Image (cartoon, rainbow, N blue to C red; front, side):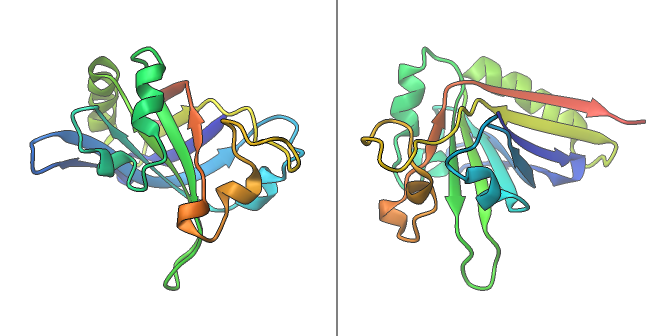
Length: 176
């Protein structure tokens, strides 16, 4: 699994010019694929995280600005939430970032938005957005749906690939 963790003060919402609601936030992230021969865990340890949840009514550039195929993957995923994990190297004095873009059907999005709205602004609420992650392909393996570490972190945006996840969950808990 790949976990994106934060608190209620790291949650935000936006409404597009077409009136479509989406949620987003900054967070920490933790990658736990089990065995890690690809070295992804070492590469992303202590890297900041971000996440967003959109619906198919959102404009594609809102959840897949480069065109890595999240919408097609979502449609092939049987109308279940699908996610795209991508790596963004530091630029303009910033830090590296790992992001999760979720494309969710209306029922998943409505439930997630309700949970996130309840937690928004409150430090005692913790959230976890989890994406199924089995690991990356090893170097020397023929190209397939699962990218290699070198493809995930490639410095050239147009040669970079994202990891597409077919199972997404969200949970909110409080520590009062």
